[in-house]
Image: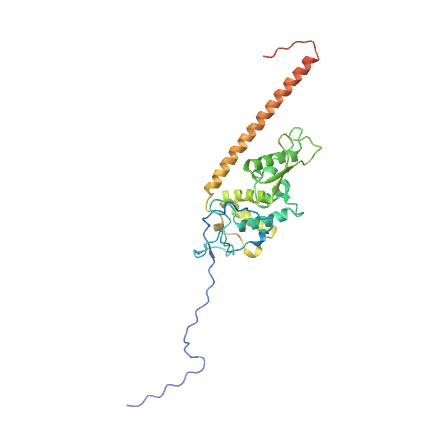
Length: 286
């Protein structure tokens, strides 16, 4: 039998690699489930000596390592921290974002924002006029200026929901509305107000948050805020708070009306007494 010819050597470049190189996979974005623990009860939300800019993405107060869940399909985003605890309280990342907005609404760094500035923020968030209390109430009534009427309506809402604020007189020369005044929202009140809004109706307000981030240029490198950083539904604790605040607003409104009626009765009685003292007529009141 003839011996087969030897196999010629393979040309360079045809070597069999020992390990096939696997194609590089794009890292899959992950996010953490919402924090189940509540904020520490004795810890203040705002520490004066700490800047809200100094939050940490892996803050153990609201991140639970070891439980990664793949991000739902959609546009990639670097947001992986939830904005709220399960009871509706804001987490540090939400507080930091609100501080960024607040600093743009308060360029003088006064520590408070005017009703006009807050109303303009709601406009940026695409609020309808009927949900913008100050803007909706900006109408002159009787002897009162439009600004004073709008201030009073906004003030009563802040008082009912117990949002932190200060009260001043806008126009001392104007006739002052009973129980009115110009409210100035603090950072704490601003953050609390928007936390109630955003956590109370997360589906409707997701676009509002992204609109504000784009308009004010806050953290553009993080991309759009995804839906899963907001609560799936309104937390029960927040629903209870809104119900209690609404009841306080109704009671305060009734008290103001009753007080004004009582004041009017006293003024009428005082007028009758003055007439009695200056005339010889005798009046009998039944």
